[in-house]
Amino acid sequence: MQAFRKFIPLFDRVLVERVAAESVTKGGIMLPEKSQGKVLQATVVAVGPGARNKSGDIQPVSVKVGEKVLLPEYGGTKVNLDDKEYYLFRDGDILGKYVD
Image 1 (cartoon, rainbow, N blue to C red):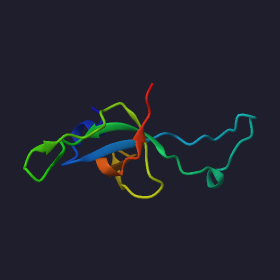
Image 2 (image 1 turned 90 degrees about the vertical axis):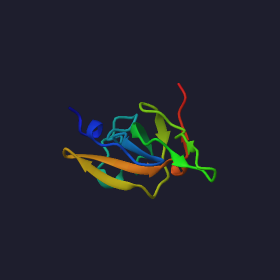
Image 3 (image 1 turned 135 degrees about the vertical axis):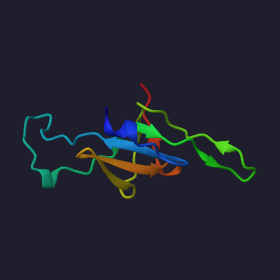
Image 4 (image 1 turned 180 degrees about the vertical axis):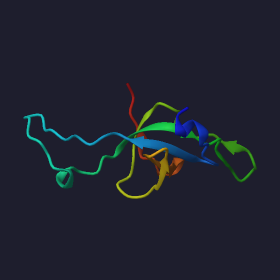
């Protein structure tokens, strides 16, 4: 069983897995890890039920499992599950999602 299936985010939090950084340019040049930029694209692997609004109703999260999202450069909480890195973000911190 995959580790993120054992983990359920609370409230409006979203668990994401960052996309691997490109290690080779389009021209075929190998890039060292230090020169690779921080990857801001991620795949949603788990979502919480949502946060309560002022009237007490649950406001659902705006992304779904499997969607590709754009993350802010800073922020998020690093979570290690079965020796794999995931990040927790609040729904409102996610900048956008990619449409196919």
